Image 1 (cartoon, rainbow, N blue to C red):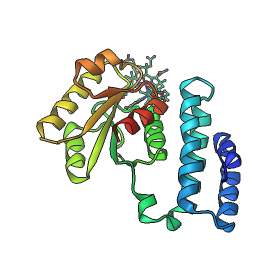
Image 2: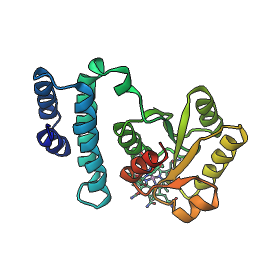
Image 3: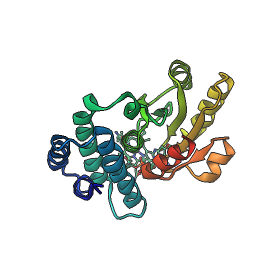
Image 4: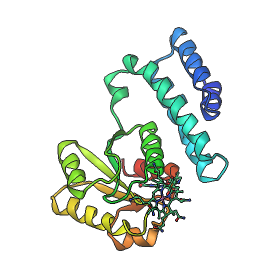
Length: 208
Ligand code: B1M
């Protein structure tokens, strides 16, 4: 059985061209696209998440890996079976109303997307009603809220309340962002808190 060490190492180093070449070589040799996705790319991104958490990788490096992952997935997409395409669930992510910071939120979006979720990114300055609308329209299993300002943290509670009051069932709401803590997450009734994008992907998977 292939261990895909080359693909994983190249993905972790963020070398998109070589990841794509290695993926294409595997395909040319008849390797199944779903196997490459699950056993090489998603596994590789799991390692990126761990390295990010431990401080071994920094934001720009993580972004390079995530971009390499996205390019490789584009090659595999037409070849994936419906089973392979079935995602871990649907996540809606956004920075709450009044807050324009999006760099951390984009990382969360990429890391969670790379770990098998179908992600809708609503962007920044997202009103509670917009989250509610998306949760209702898609089969959302997880909502991830980002806030970078102490002044927009209360908007996280308002958003959680709006989603709960809309009657959405089985939706897990997770929160994060520099000023957010586990204690704050507990206080506002969130289902979870993640300190960084790698942890957000792990947390999302734990709910899948
Ligand atoms: Co702003 N800003 N900013 N800013 N800004 C901060 C946040 C601030 C700490 C700077 C400071 O004063 N030291 C401060 C907030 C103070 C506070 O409230 N305690 C601040 C301020 C005051 C402001 C303005 C009010 C300034 C002004 O206009 N007077 C203004 C507000 C605008 C608004 O939002 N309404 C403002 C504006 C801006 C820019 C537009 C100039 C720009 C944003 C550009 C952009 O995002 N496209 C900006 C920036 C760049 C920053 C700093 C310098 C960097 C933020 C960043 O991107 N970090 C920031 C200072 C700092 O943090 N050092 C600052 C990198 C990013 C990867 O980290 O977003 O924390 P972060 O994401 C992390 C984790 O937090 C976590 O994962 C990521 C890592 O993996 N995470 C989640 C984030 N979201 C998550 C969601 C999850 C899970 C994890 O869901 C489950």
